[in-house]
Length: 120
Image 1 (cartoon, rainbow, N blue to C red):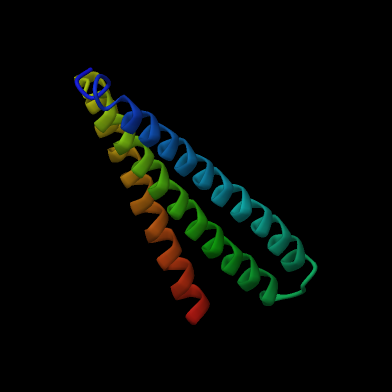
Image 2 (tube, helix red, strand yellow; image 1 turned 90 degrees about the vertical axis):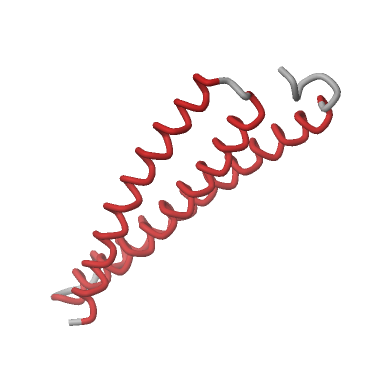
């Protein structure tokens, strides 16, 4: 491609940056999952309505990690697409962003409902 000729070192650096961003996104998801498992385990040992409230707090926290991870994956996908300059990659990016945005929107709505339940 156009960028891969004279700008090959820069392209290589950006591909590495994108891969590092992917790894950070995966790390965020794993940290969120581990914290969620630990938090729900503690919540399950609690009795009464406090158990449900603690579980909901953990779900909100996990949702934040998922949203952050999705946003990092989008950044990485934009970098990949910008480097490839291929129409097929652009269409693929569009589909990924739409799907991830829909997931984020629904997840954000669910988290807002959980927050409202915790406040009442």
